Length: 411
Ligand code: GAL
Image (cartoon, rainbow, N blue to C red):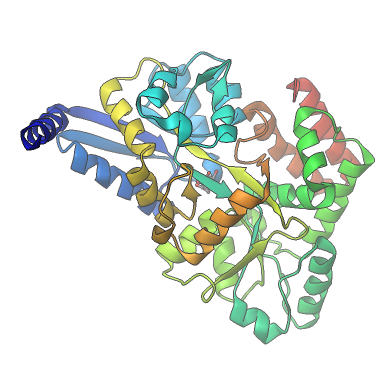
């Protein structure tokens, strides 16, 4: 028996050594967002020391710049060996329907993953019964961040509803805080919008927007823009020029009280800023969204015709493994996509996210690819601009509905 193990270990070892050549991973996890990916790459290098890993990143939160570069490369016949893509419509409605991705169903079966990932998540990465990417994490979109000590100084509590938020905002303004809500560039404004939409509409009607059951021009959906406008009045005027990290910094520095951002903000505050969850920063569900977890999932796929296919498959095997996920996620500020991860490796914020992920009602994020195809998402930035320049809820609602019709959202 011992001999058999030894032979197996030696064979596996020499197989890993035998892997050589390159591996190019494409993502938008640069700079402050880089440490979790780097840890995963380091693990890959440990397993396959002779493979040269090219960490190709294009800076810009939510992939605003990376997605355009990726498109050029994919259409130009120069796909990276594997790239970051959100589970859901961003993957399926774009690259899968265009027949640019390899079917990974056999890999899932071989690795025993069919029982390791939640069924709902497998559905999000599947098209016509085939699976097209490997999810590395689950992020939560609807989180409100603050610094507990500062709220105590100001004598306010984290607001539970948007109505309460607006009252708290006024209280803080009266105390001299010009912009109680820290906000960044366009995509972060859309990010705020999806939390307001979820809060105003509730989970069922929020989901109905993406299936086409609720029109953007329905009075209920128009009302979202009205609340959104009042929330915007609590934010800084220079939002367009700030990255999401700079918006978080405003909260940490006491220039603002709150920021609504996905829990990569927790990764930033713990991994980059070295803060302790619960002390250096606090969190709560975005107002009026308690009990609902707006999810998104980063995943990696295998484009057709890559240069280093075998190395890419080994990358995917690592991304989907328990060790890979429990290395990446505690640094990233996300929880594992796998259901068997080790909670002791995660901080108190992430442990609370794990509990909510299990017990809450789940809906998908618009901005981060879960519910609508890229064609809708990219044009939603324009809807946001229309609203910001006109402050006209009906005009924004009409524009959103026109795009929904054009891309046949939900059909
Ligand atoms: C999201 C992505 C996260 C994080 C964030 C900010 O779209 O899923 O992992 O990178 O953008 O850039």
